[in-house]
Length: 400
Image (cartoon, rainbow, N blue to C red; front, side):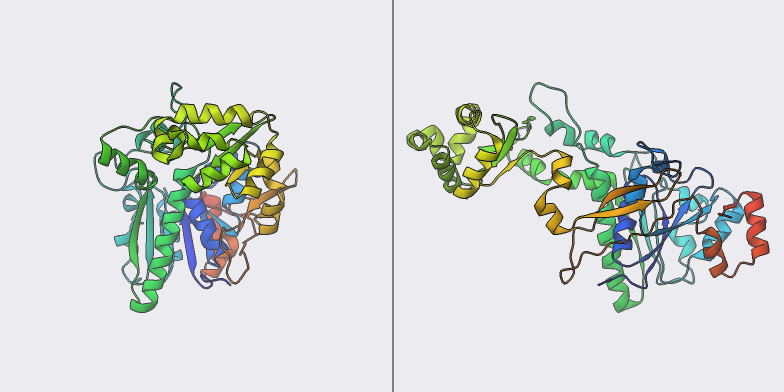
């Protein structure tokens, strides 16, 4: 099932947020034309580790299923080419700084005349209005700005960023959701729209629960490592050989935990009897339970607690994750073959959605910057002579 089959996306994004959005759209069936700078291309091509001389694994996994068209958007001819490329009914998405697209006459109001069905999505760092609108931003910077770092890490230690690009990828998902909603609306009204998303808005959105709790109590949350302020025990415990996460979301589960660890006598202690009491005596609860968990191997503890119906997981490293039976049964890891000076296969995670039991995956990859330029420009009606002129002038980069 390809719900976006027939939709064409003009992708003027780079790094993570925008490319993740358009990778999702490609998996959903859209044709995605990625606009890259001649020469260097997307910045993520040059991140480490390198796959031969072509790209990084980050670039490969975020840009599969797309065609590469290399245009110099700082040149008038390049801007003209892009405007000619955009058709009514297309989806245009960019992550340029607010005002940059408009300076190049590539803003929504510039492109919409004659294209009433155009869907236009602009991704920014802080939004397109306000005192910080013109500033650049990256995932960890926004994690600091919106308070994610203030609640992440361990008490008494410096704030820590979440180790995955949750703000970037979340913004990509919100952008994709907005685009899909706009496509659905266009089928009814025939009209497109402008969509605005930002890393700031995504970051504040992830802080929904901490902000609500702070507004109700007036108390700033503290860094608690793997624990949560609302429940106890709901955190990582040391085992004899590693660590496990135990999550008791209610008092019934806690009683099951005590039985599985052969600590049922603790149920009579009022400090352990209710979640509110356990939260109040969090350190006592943790230390008391960990005195037992330290004596058990992770495999044994997981076996016992699962048998008792207690939510539990060993803390896996990535080697364990990609080889995990459940992950493999889910079919999440797909092989993406990278052709370069040193060909390599990369595990690319597929779309976390299945339609009628099928997980869609767009495997194609443009290894070189501008690999598809000539074919795309020919489909626009440009002659080979004109394309060669654009290549010689540096406006376009095309593979021989």
